[in-house]
Length: 120
Image (cartoon, rainbow, N blue to C red; front, side, top):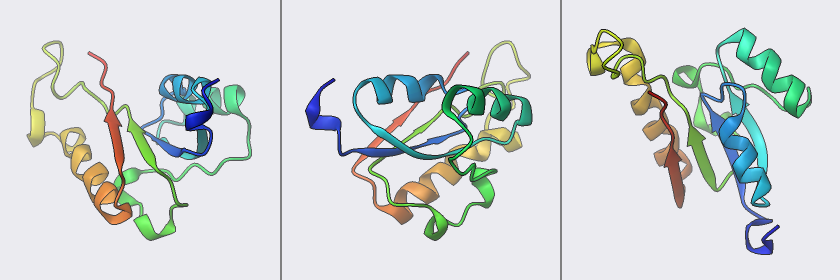
């Protein structure tokens, strides 16, 4: 593992089952929490990564002051609202607004590093 990343901490927003987390941990980074609203996804996530970490829940309701310090955020927010397979409501769909919750957290925590993943 690269030693240059060993002190970087991240939070996994819209975590799903933790696919994005695996890559960052394999690079030597440390996950300090996650945010997931789907209870079935959370069950699988906890099977993979354990029961200890706090699920911060709905990121649209998170007070950034209540989050631990971290250097990097990853987020796999829902793409259905933007996908050609979906109804393509985009920003008019509540799920399309999630990006603004992520930006709010990013600004409040003054992060140096950002990455967003989407699946279509």
